[in-house]
Image 1 (cartoon, each protein chain N blue to C red):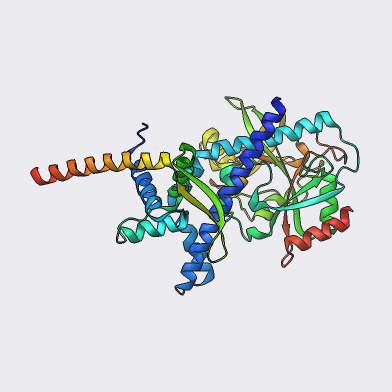
Image 2: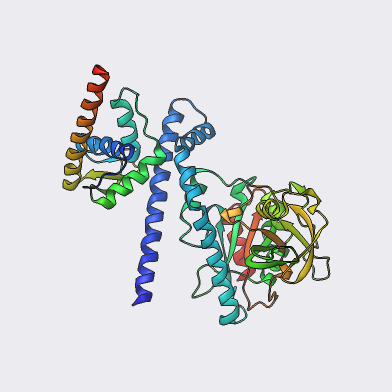
Length: 308
Length: 109
């Protein structure tokens, strides 16, 4: 009963989102066509058509941002649950699917993010090359992957780079007021895939996610400001996360919240609690950048041949 | 009767009036119509139109249907309902009352 009801509600919400997406897209197309007819270039017309949606959209977006962050956290929670409980059979990633990162696949409930993407492209270079890579089996249409799956895609895939993303709160201790903060666990490529640079220091270097490497941390802007008064001397300082010391190597820009996910601290993948490379344990969200000139369709075909 | 804020109910009034005059229209046509009918004075912000349409649909003042347009485009058409016409009469009356009152103050003050 409850299940059926939840499913129905989810289905209705998804349908409503699709409906609104279609409607907004149709509106933007008509406006673009009109502006084109008036002599504007395709790109300028599209920009103008989007711009006319105005600040209202930005306001709605920011009002919902908190909610969106929560949804992505819920997604990570589901993933953790699956890692602990389901102990999936090996060979899970029988096929892999690509979705444009634009369309945020993590959760159907991420409502405003879809509209934000539709009305305003992702604030990253060449957003059309950004994709999520999902595992798929008979039950799950889109599910997370294991670090070993990502290795396969790095070897042979149609990608420039593939990065892992996981989220879980972490304990920050060894300072005056210990805190539980939002942690993100990523492979070093994550930042270069998004084309994001630190405003202070640097992001992760290649190899910094090797278990042997010195433990490095990159701070989010809000944590840096809120806990450390924006002090530049934070660089090189050791902070204790989940009981282990990490050297702060950088601070990220204020507006950095990829896919509306805001983390306080960014740590290397391998320090994720319970990190494992076992193929049956699929705990990682994969984001990738397609090679120049490779379409999503072509990339999907290549992936099919790898994972078939 | 619900009384949302003035700005919101003015937008409702304009949209309902447009739909009652012109029959079923999609959002894009509603924006264009209001702009043209007001002699270019009123430009409905598109980012507020769709939330308003969806809100009015859940109030039961309009209903909607996907159709193919004359130019072969899939568009979502909105149509005013009987409840919407009632709401329109109410909004229009309250608007006229307000605008008469403002007019009186401007003349006399």
